[in-house]
Image 1 (tube, rainbow, N blue to C red):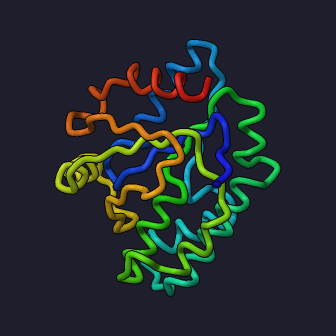
Image 2 (cartoon, rainbow, N blue to C red):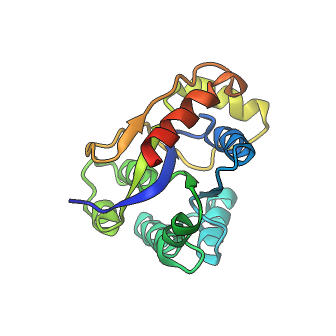
Length: 196
């Protein structure tokens, strides 16, 4: 059975689904309720994560295996480093993360044109699961509309993949409405019910 990190909540969804906006809003509400939260994302802002971000933003061609290894190295440091998720979960009431290994599996399987990419699964098989996954499922056209309105660009051709293993709890809010109207209080209730 996979290890689950208590108090670790992951938001998954394609670019423009509202993950970052929701995390920001949830963190504000949690902090006003004196519930200490720490927000993070993948790829991280570490030296390894910045290499990934820069390569993707610049559109530099990098082979799929090299990128897969970089994501795994970034995730390892993100989890086990001195400022990593496992340490933060000991000192905060809730750790919120924009993307995690599920995005890597979806993206890397897409890049390799197979749903059973052995390298992607091999590199991610030992990473622990979050206690809760909040999957933001909205149409690609809505996400693209949001990205254009923010004048952002797609940083990955992520696909909408649901996890096959149901060990962590999952929640799926309706994200077809504007991000500002998504019921943050309902998501917070789910987070608190799961992590407390």
